[in-house]
Each structure stands twice: as C-alpha cells, then as structure tokens.
Image (cartoon, rainbow, N blue to C red):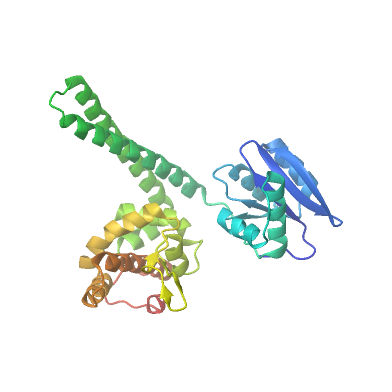
Length: 329
C-alpha cells in the first residue's frame, strides 16, 4: 500500500512518554507533541484526521498502544522497521537528529515509499510471545544459577546453605520454565491444532519447535513465500564482494530470529538422520567438501521450506511427497 496523492500522511516519532507528530495541511508542515496516552491519541487523530495514513516505527513496546488505538478506530497505519527508516534518512543526507525531525522523515517516507497496512496479531500469539519472553529471562537466570553452582563446587570449602539455596533456585526455575512451556503449547494447540499436527509430522521438528515456528511466523499468515521466512530467521546468505575481490566467506545474515535459528540448528542434527530430504541435502554438501556446520545451516533452510510447504498445502510430511511448493523450493 502506498499513500495516494489525496491521502494525507502523518509521521509519528514514538517515545515512552510522548509522541512527536508531523503532518501537512495545504502544503504547510505542522508539528505537534502529545502524551503517549489515550487522551494524546485522541488529540493526535483530531489533528491528523481520521482518513490519514499514520506512519511510525516499531520502537520496542511503546508503539503498541497507539497502533491498537488507531486500528480499532479504523485509521490506516504503517509500522516500519527502524533500520529501513534509518537508511531512508541516510539516503537523503540528513544532518542532525531530533524527535521533530524524525517525525518529519516518517511523514516523508509515507509520502514517497510504498508501505504495508499494519494488522495486529491474534491475541493468542501476543500472549504466547509474552510467555516466550518470560521463558527467555528465566533461562538466563537458570544459566547464571548453574554457573554459580559449578563455581561453588570447585572450591575446597563449600557452605552447605549456599549450595542448598542454589540447588533450590535451579529446581524452582525448572518448574517455572515447564509451567510456561506447558501453558504456551496448550494455547497454541487450542488455536492451531491442525498446524501443530502438520509441523510435528516433519522428522526433526518436535512439538515445542512446532510451537516456536508458529509464533515466529505469526501463524504462517504474514509470509507469502519461504524466502521471506528464511530471511526473517536470518538464515539468508550474505555475500561481500566487489569486482574480482571477495571479502571473506559467504555467511548468513543472522538478522533477527535468533531464538528460532538456534532451535532449528539443534533440530538439524536429528533431521540430517531422520528426514529424507534433509539427509540427502546434508550428504550431498558434505560430499562436495562443504563444512559440516555449513551443511547443517542448509538443513535449517530445508526445514523452513518444508514447514512452509506443508502448512500451505495442508498435507503432512511424506518422504516421497513432492508438491508444487516443494518443487519450487
């Protein structure tokens, strides 16, 4: 979606407490600052107009309340990747930075570049991502406790109370992590029972990974091709060469999707043995002299291709099955 000539564009730079707003009326640029609250949102819509296109960046969680408010009130909005906006500003050789200037650049981006209408995720996905975020924090705490416990065990004198508390903390964290994982999978299987069953049919992908894939891909409604899915996971190759000069090896981008990338890499070890297509790919690459890790990254890509094809076709994994989607992959 791009802003037509008749569509007014409102740029919004979001911070925790305030919104810097920029809009045009009759060729005149106007700036406004409102609170990042519902009262401020109402003031923003009154100034910008209900029919305008609102353009903002995905800045942590601070933009979400505004995005939901605009969506619920029928306003068009685009939520941009901050890196895309940064490159747009650099391309125009901008000097200096402020909230007002950023809001004006967001308005200009919406006027000049095609954008996609923002749609909120389903409530179950939002809840599951919150559970996943808490799980990540608890995993970090668990790692710290394990390291502390190992360091304590290496000392010649060990306090029994200190060791007991560390062991108790580890047990509690294990129980909390299990409860969070159980709740997340329960919610996903209630809403995406068929998708969970399809993904779990792929050798190498278990129930937990199937749930993580659904969360990562937004229920597989946000990606129109497996290439988008691979790029989102940071598994696309990145080449750095100029003319006849090649700078280093071709590596994956590692942009975004760190959690699912790690999980897929773990799954690739079993997939290279149990998954027919993944095994053939791995063996072929190793026979050509490729490093084992490089071949496993290729297996990760293959798993994402299979997941996308199986969800879109609705056909569970079959070792000898080849759909049009799989052939094009």
